[in-house]
Length: 69
Image 1 (cartoon, helix red, strand yellow):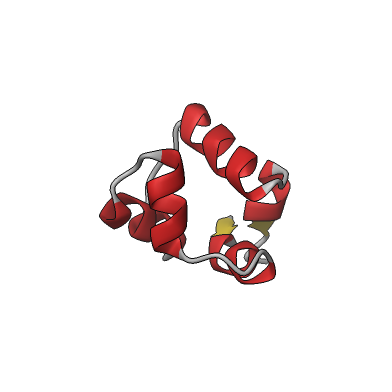
Image 2 (tube, rainbow, N blue to C red):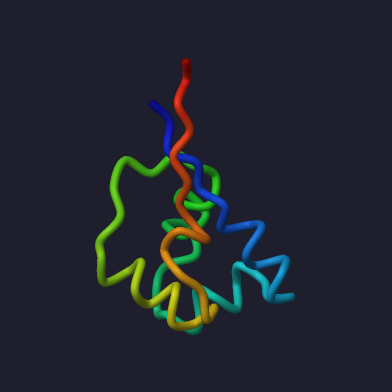
């Protein structure tokens, strides 16, 4: 089982930077970078909600499940 984080894809589609998103939602850019690279072990729903609100997207646009089989 693998959860893929497509934050970089959504940011590119919206023509926004990681720095802009960090400033907009009020999160440390280092923590956001950990999420973007897929190294995060968890994400708070409040953070996911803030990201979706800022980028006008759905959680499924950012997170994707891929079966390893």
